[in-house]
Image 1 (cartoon, rainbow, N blue to C red):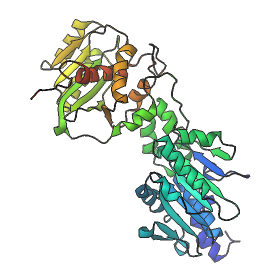
Image 2 (cartoon, rainbow, N blue to C red):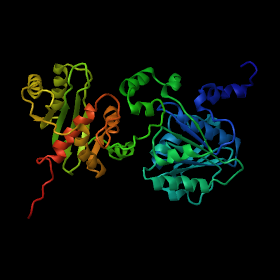
Image 3 (cartoon, one colour):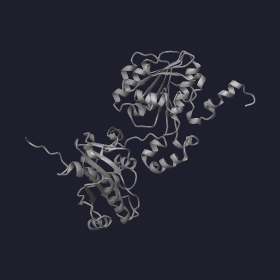
Image 4 (cartoon, one colour):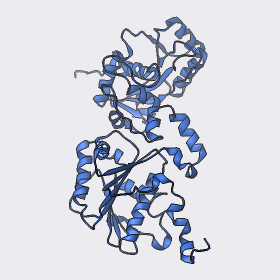
Length: 420
């Protein structure tokens, strides 16, 4: 520090190399695309913003494309976010944001323009020298639209002498990500959430590791691994992403059921407990996964009763293959007023799941939130009868199948046509 001048000392706090961890630094060598694919909280946004800042401050003629899944995300994350371009720039060199023009202007003349991946034709015509593409894994799930956006960006990347693109994303097994991974022009770096522990609250790291640590989703979202779909599975992750929505209003529910897949023993598998509802629009919605691990009969019965009470369930559906009378008596002991229906499985878990998977394909099921362990099990159910997901048995998935079968496939839950 003694060797630094005053101007250099003033810059010390904003000098990214002082705080960056190795995974946030650009790779050496000649590359067209730097794909930074890492877990949540790794510092991908900060790395992308600092790279853009470096380009803009060192090249007054830089014309940079900032592309996100939507213009709103480009503004709220890439420009105005806590790790965005404005926040990470020293005040005297901070770019001016012109929202009406979707443009950033640096004091030296460098400029950046905001684009939405949902509007690929907006990139047809403009020319750029560099680009930062954020969360390309969540760009429009339509392969054609996401690819057209990327193609238009590449075709307009013809200014300057050293064109480069930084793409930051959490791993997702989508066509555009796989295309970049297969390209010889791509350099890939990444890592896990905990590598940025110095800049993350310990409570956050502990909470997400407890929730997702032993799931395939955790490997993707925390460890930064690209989890490919299992070939031949009844569900795949892109399908589950398409069916995700925010919580539905309780007043829209025509029926609410709690489905239970009881464990064979307290030391064995989990007790699958899933809450689902049928809406007035004919869509079934998965509301909660209340499953419990290694629970005694009294414990999982209380969990069922609590779920039924919390969601004001019309029916509790419980598989009774493993001791029907015992299942009924345990649930009645927890709450004598439970509206209980015992069901008996005549086919295997996967065979029962196939018509439910067809409901997802038809767009008749939505997930109101993220259910990591449940979705991992769904993606492990194979056509033909095998199970290749986490754990010994898909207990959560089986409970979901019972719930949706009661709502959508039983006679009472089936849509009715009235002749007028």
